Image (cartoon, rainbow, N blue to C red; front, side):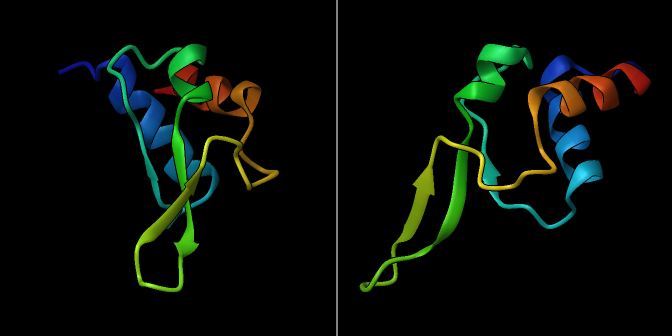
Length: 72
């Protein structure tokens, strides 16, 4: 069974940084999808999750993610 690009994207991120919290809004698993990931950054003062579209993890870049995806 082959993985979809979105599944590969998710697995690649988890390979580079396990336990990273994020939300993928898209199914293409391409660079555009990667650039629109909502990275969970914590919680605000009322307990709601906070997000950013800028990846806060230096070890996760599109180039590194793509390399990991190509291995799958």
